[in-house]
Image (cartoon, rainbow, N blue to C red; front, side, top):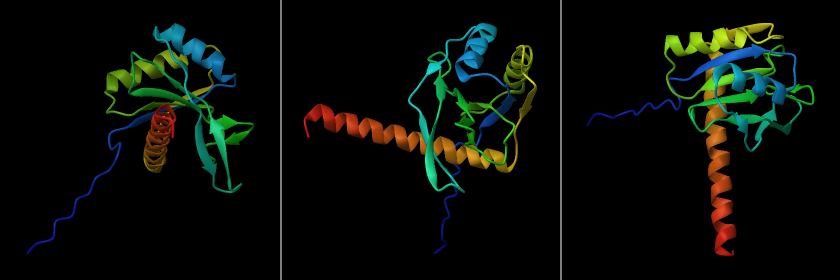
Length: 156
C-alpha cells in the first residue's frame, strides 16, 4: 500500500510590500486611506515574540472592511522590530491571497507617491515564509480571542 503525503502550505500565495516610512503609524495609515480611497482602521494588536529578547511585543495591525485580504502591519514597537532582519522597514502591506501584478504595481505606485516615503519594495523568498508564520499566528490569536469571548458570553 502506498503512503500518501499531504503537503499543505498555509498562505501559499501571499504577497508583501515593505515600506520605509519614517512617520507614525496613524499618519502612514491616513496617507494610505487618502491615496488609495480606502478606510483602514486599527485592529487588535498582534503579539509576536522577539527571537533574541525572549519577550513578546505588541505590533499595530490595520484592517479594512473593503479589503479583508490586505492588512498593514507596523514593524516597530518601541524600537524593537517584528522582523529583525529588516531593521530599516517600518511597515508591511500584506496580501493574504494571491496578488496580481496590477494590484502590486498600483499599491507600490500609490505608496511611493506619499511624501516622506523613502523605500517601497516587494518581498520574496525566505521573508515570505516569515509572513506565512505571522499570518498563521494572527489567525490563531484571533481564534483564541473568539473562544474567550464565547466563554465570557456564556458566563463561564
